[in-house]
Length: 455
Image 1 (cartoon, rainbow, N blue to C red):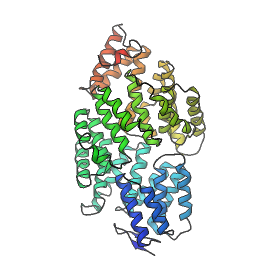
Image 2 (image 1 turned 120 degrees about the vertical axis):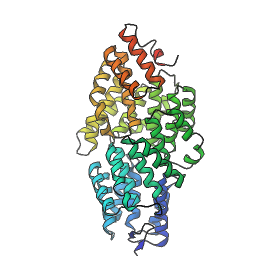
Image 3 (image 1 turned 90 degrees about the vertical axis):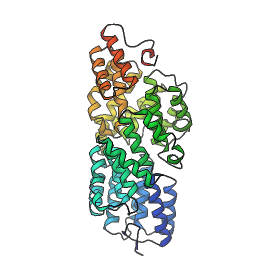
Image 4 (image 1 turned 180 degrees about the vertical axis):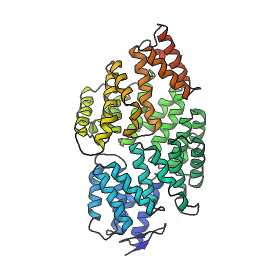
């Protein structure tokens, strides 16, 4: 049976119950809330011959970058392969198959063409936007959405999500004023739109407005965190704001309550946990035994080698917890990944492997090697995905390694660079002071970490 979805697209093989469940799953994914995987499972049960339900199931398991998700996605694509499907559905399945093979660039292009032909397909827009994010393609984060805007208006279901995605793309390309406006409109229309909240949080981070970021996220946390699978990441953004204000106690409290202390083994949650603990580590903050349970959760993925950005964050945890064997496992899996034919070979070769090696060198006290590796890759760090805010960890590690390596000229230059971007930042000003002390021969590093911490 062919039916029509809420955006006017014909849907092959659908029953009323199956289409309703599939559309519920798509809405949940669009807001990043509740349980779209359960909803799409109901859709497949009700309409086992509906290819769009299988396509959605595949996307749900691909976008988490979980290694085991690949097999589920491939099975979903295979289940749909013999079903009658229209052009839009075939394009979704072809793009999902490409990503399931590890072909990120092919998937991005296929989704680009899909959206040009079906601009009201919010699933194609969203998964394309996420693929752009995982590839670090900031321009396409903006332009993929901008291309379809003439076809949209506020009366069309899903407009809030289009605004939220456009907001994030604008933020990643430096148009902070319009990004904030679009993001705020997004959550005004749909308060549960996790990506809209996230986009404005990024604006405050990039503008170095920690107090405004706290005002954006703290009073509204009951709204944006409710059933959101982006909740951990938005809590991470709130913690970043407190970190910039040197409120380390509050950062640790947020970590324990909502970031790493939850015990989540979801990869994207563990990425946030690793990144936050490493930032604290660079500042010399005593995080106690928090590295150990996080490293335990990363341990089964030490040899995953399916996405370089994840490998880097696993290495942070293994260095923080002093797990030498697991550090070596990551490096070995990266060596294998770089010999493969999939796109992650490039992500790993150009960014992930040198970054992981640099973190290991830093942990071993070989700061000169860390500096050499990070300087060589920092300007192409976008090649392994993430946002500007996430990749800032590369710069933070580089400047600290330069301080500890005893290179006063480089340390001074890097500190001045950061202070120019964040002139009101207490951290940036401390870095400048440390660099000046190094140049005067007074040292910029005391007792392991002391000079880095707030006095």
